[in-house]
Image (cartoon, rainbow, N blue to C red; front, side):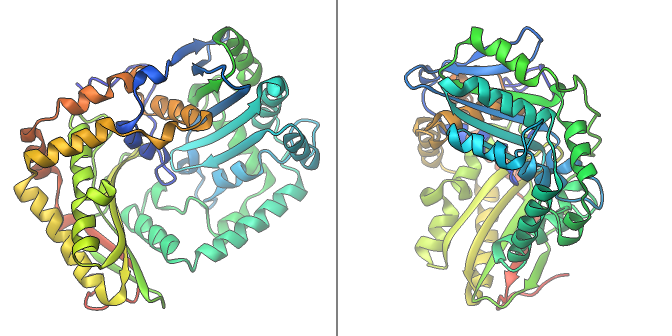
Length: 452
């Protein structure tokens, strides 16, 4: 059994396409636990939050997540969660859009929402003296959003402009093509931001229905950092989130393996440099070999300037400015995914080298020196994810979302220390599958043919 598992709530892990996957991976290199004292706060009404007190500055940051995100968008209404996230702070209760935004600006309050694949998230930051007004505004946004016609149509227009721009941007095009191919009959295959058709079809009633259905206490995760005590936070949580429904419908989405069968898919686009995504089946976050797989990924392509792919594709051959890989565990699937951009004339050679390194790691594993240097890097580096109150709050939510224990930061290095060279060789042989590595390319690549 994975020593990091707890029984408090079901695991929810999503991304932007991987927001919380990225947070979990970054926590492999966080600051020492002694720098972050995390308290579990249970409000009088039974709502849980994780708190890091820091009274050095008069600032409070809150991060929240509801499970669901874009994956619960109805068929034909792709982008609904994203639309809600963009308009939910455009007026609430008896405060219209203009006044709501003016209050935020006058009080120097930051309030922002996003919809990722598996989570709908929010973040708030305020001066301590404005905390009561700030939390009241957050309560109104979540429980009484207005969705008035003027801001809805204004935001709709902005979304449509963004979609039009992304439709011709290679990085966005390759992401859309990959996810649609990997998950053709699954919510992950639908565009998270929607399409021109789906966004145009969304009504004010749809926006209200999403908020009323999915903003509920049983799907809520909270992280708070800053100038507030546990005694102060408990009642404030109830005042802010107590009016949310206690329960929401179950999320009925199947667990599905990605359709990665070694295919090459080419989307023709007139640009001098192609962009490619390559991927295979990944590993679930709760798998007992996850820490081993993370170290393998760091060596293969996740270690930036130290990875094999970076050294081989960029440093040795000069074929690409960057190439990288990541483990992406989701709530309903898992990927080992990478990306590379290279000149059209160099695409075939880059793909060949990526497949070669994939196969070599599977066949020959890693050296003791690679394991130890990677372990030292992972356990000793300081994480940028803990460089502000906002990022710490977001990290606290990421830990809860992934169902990790409250002392995870304190314990994480021990999990990596337990990985042996034999573990690395075994997991490399079992997990890496160069024959299933699927390549999706946007551009005009030379020397490589599509297989479908």
